[in-house]
Amino acid sequence: MSKRREILKKLSWILREDDPEDPYYDPIHLGAMLVVCLTAAGALFWLLWTLLVFEGGIFSKLKALFFVLFTSKTLQDYGYRGAPYAMGAFEGWLGNLMALILTILLLRALHDLYFEVLRRAKK
Image 1 (cartoon, rainbow, N blue to C red):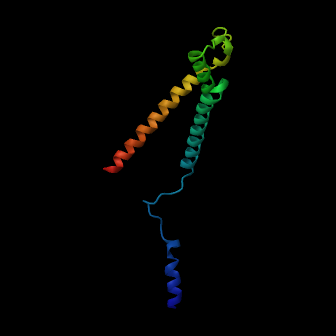
Image 2: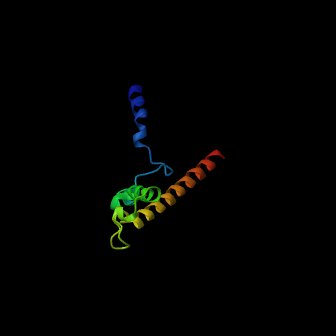
Image 3: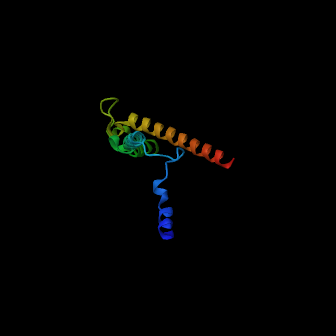
């Protein structure tokens, strides 16, 4: 008889009532988390794609700009004939520039958030 009681005592955690303080599964929270994560991943993809790939990316434009500024090359060597019709290597510079600004703002916000949490954790 004591063996049976020991087994029931060990298995009693199955039959106990739920503590209202325990976290529980909520499908609404799971769905919202999935939507937020997919939206954040899409926004990050768009931001990086616009910065690095759109119309050659920002690095190709910076390379062409540095060659124009520091060598004897001209804007016409890179296909520039006049804005906005024939910009050559500088096509899409506004999109790349805006993506760069948004990336800097995002990194600054994450940096500030990280150090704010770090400061609160040290208290």
